[in-house]
Every structure is written in C-alpha cells, then in structure tokens.
Length: 84
Image (tube, rainbow, N blue to C red; front, side, top):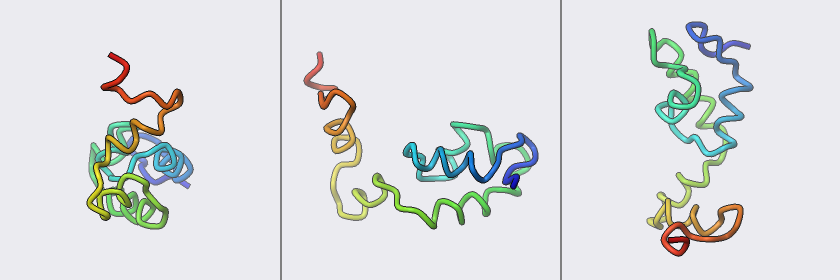
C-alpha cells in the first residue's frame, strides 16, 4: 500500500527505513522524500513509526546519549572518536 503517492513510497519502504534507524518523519523524508511534497502522508508516517520500537527514541527517553550508544554498537564495534 502506498503511503506517499507523490513519490511512490510504500508502507513496506517506510517500515524498512524505520528498522534501519529512522525514528521521525523527517528522518524518513531524508531517506526517501516521503512527506516532502504535499505533506498529506506525514500523519500516516507518524502512525507507522509510532507502532514500532525505536532504539534511538528509547535511549533518549532514558536520558542516555543517543549517538554515543549507537557508535559503540557499530559493525566493527569501534567508536568514531577511537578510530581517528
């Protein structure tokens, strides 16, 4: 089912971007442009995002640093500040 008819973005695509870490409509928009033209799909995107868990949102709700936590769990387990 299409969520954004302006750019042909499906619900499955939005869910995939959410699984990959996009937690807000703005982050979804930066991945696939959904919500950036007429804006009629933004509420639908919000409802899709509201159904699943978002690791970044959970960390923020706990008052923990969001990006630092994600850096520790990168594919090679090397933090960005340690790689330099």
